[in-house]
Image (cartoon, rainbow, N blue to C red; front, side, top):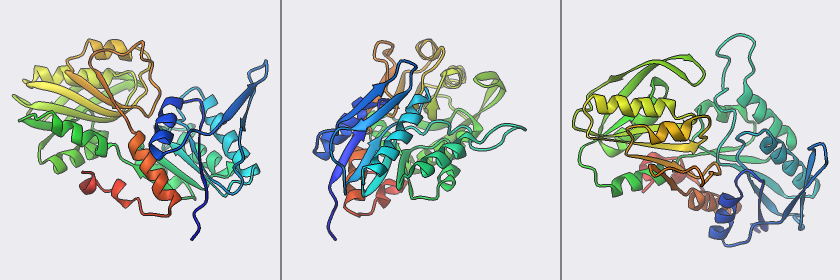
Length: 317
């Protein structure tokens, strides 16, 4: 089978990551221009031919919503430019926390985004560490769900901590933390929290023993960092030797940087799925790159090879 030419493009949400992905893949990032009208309306345009190409568009869909609209318009532009296939790489899938109706008269935002991407003409979607696994089922096109475990586990092993225990900052993330605990052959503890509203915690307590342990908190999103900060403080109060946290998506809104700096965390290990503001970074934050993983996925998809190993926890090393 003849392999189609590959073109990699980026929206404006995370250009630095897209450039790193393209470089590792072995090519330059494709040219895209963004024209803006005085009222804020914009129009993306590909600056090179993509007729018959497999087009990969890298764009996280975190706020502002311009990021989503830009991605949709780039998909439409690629379709109208006769691309053979349009694949979107969404390192961070925004609106993923709206995966169900948790109260009356609210939307299911994640499903709406899936519908919009499908309507725009996408052929395939690649994302990482969805907040809710069932979002994959919102799509009628192939969806490849990558895991940051292949990045985090080697780093954790390099720390040579002798008495690790994995922890979930809430009951909802227990399955994720349990997967790490099973693979690393450690115990698991869970924080039980009660919320008073979005980003507001009323109470929290630890289920399990952390005394004398090197605790690794596992989460998918760090937003205001209120939960992870409170959890780290609670772990130290319960006698933990040290507390670190790993989280894939660094949303970092509100008082996040202040909460992290003032927490009991020794280290917060994040990835670059969302563009970071380096002027706000604190010493506790450590960013690991996802570029190698996404570049390999692009290569495998373009060459019609299996990407199974990126799904399976037991094959990450």
